[in-house]
Length: 115
Image (cartoon, rainbow, N blue to C red; front, side, top):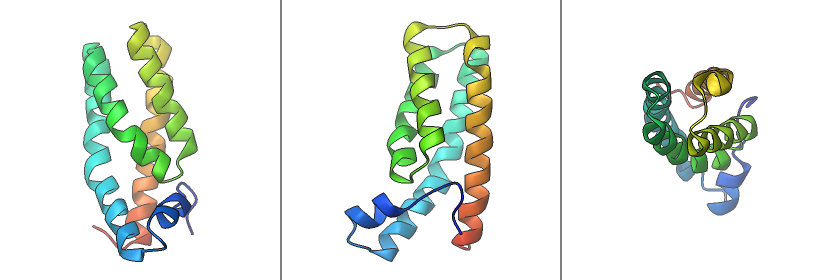
């Protein structure tokens, strides 16, 4: 049972296509972790552009998977990059995002029998 994600938008746009939903899940598991690393490393290097690009890239996927908390975190991260804020101002948001993504990945891999 999905606790950290909701595929209702995926099913709505795909006319309840189960194969399409699985493709979206696989795409998430393959691409989002790399972008989370980019956010983490970009934050460490105070590379606002790298953080923004990574956050912006995963934003539609988070929305599509009904990950509202993570989606709000990404919006906050994007706003932080535009303001070129201090690292301490966004550190906890990034930490929460990483934790939420990690939980969701674990759940998706279990639910869809992915490695």
